[in-house]
Amino acid sequence: MNTTSPSFGAAGAAGAAPAATVSRTRRVVDAPTRMFHWLFALSFTGAYLTGDSEHWRALHVTLGWTMAGLLGFRIVYGLVGPRQARLGALWRKLTGVPGWVRATLQGSAPTAAHWRQGQNLLMGVFIAALLLAVPPLVLSGYATYDEWGGERLGHLLEEVHEAAGQLFLLLVLGHLALLAGMSGLRRRNLALPMLTGRSEGNGPDLARRNHSWLAIGLLLAVLGYGAWEWHEAPNGLLPTANASHQNDD
Image 1 (cartoon, rainbow, N blue to C red):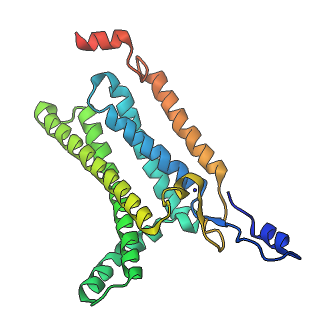
Image 2 (image 1 turned 90 degrees about the vertical axis):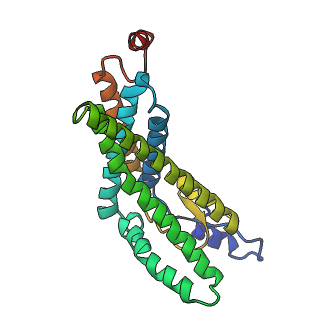
């Protein structure tokens, strides 16, 4: 996501001869959105890697609930948070897809700007699909863990959960591939703003306030929940030698 303040640049330029252009950046992603993104990504990665082992089941379940909690935060923040973080922007992208498709089919020679818009719309589709895929992923996991419906239904729910996990992984890989492709076409690292919060370009900050306190609060909430689950689990969230031996027996 290193910026030079516009006021500093103006003051430095006063009374001086024109010099090389000063690189400016502007804030486009605030801290809570970035914190959500990385906690969400780490939670899914950890849950996916621990999904096939009974020894890591407690951690797997905890990470799944963490994803659900993070989704809840993102929905609330997307409804009452600052304008640039609102889910309404994502909704407008989704509603713009049919019009873009019609314009593409009817147009004789789509412009570069038209294809650029299409890339942005496709990115919005991937993001929406990732968010929408969380509830069935988590609910099927909970149903499997709680053994709903006996052995026959439990086996079916387990297959649904595995399929949902694979679908989510494909969406993640598609999202990353699209991001890499767009970065190459535009010759700019489009993933960097999710790290620094900032993007190259003049103009006012889209995210006028960083809200660092909320990002820290979100991190502490996730860590606190993990600590609570660790305390409640009989053997903690990490497999011990004794627990592994008992499971093998």
